[in-house]
Length: 212
Image 1 (tube, helix red, strand yellow):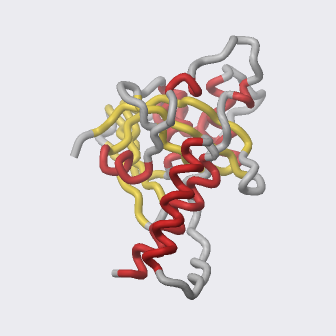
Image 2 (cartoon, rainbow, N blue to C red; image 1 turned 135 degrees about the horizontal axis):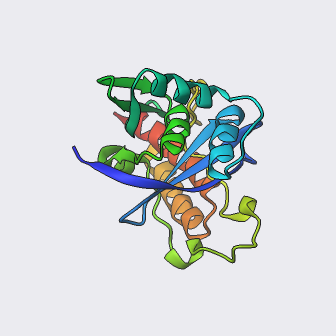
């Protein structure tokens, strides 16, 4: 399995989840995007570092960075290594201390930006959860004075917390319902309504699982 380097493309408040934020990662040498819904504290920690905002007192991830450096280590890379039951899993590699620590992607990325460390995603995770935009032009950089909150539409693909119990599937033929959902998914992607596309994709996976 190969690792794919990604960069942070956008971070915005999510309209689909109360208090949640959409973190969008972009493949460095490709077109795929990986949307992850994260909590407000983690989003604040990432945004503060990206915008070079220095709080009067160290935030949790600043404290972790200080501890790692005082112990003689440095974060060399972070990697989103797995996706199980709609939950992402990451690992932080710490050089100098010979450590590899399991973490939530948001915490791992909050540390990565502080150490200027590369961010990777396993190709199997990108294959499963990545989104390819219909048109690359739609994601081209806008003028520098444009509000950062308008970088892109919010995406809601997977939660980092435990997923809610699946709702009961309507009584209908799975095959015909799957065909309809796939058409709706294609339409949502064409319209770049990725939040709706994510919900449709989850429903497709649920129905496909019930057919096995």
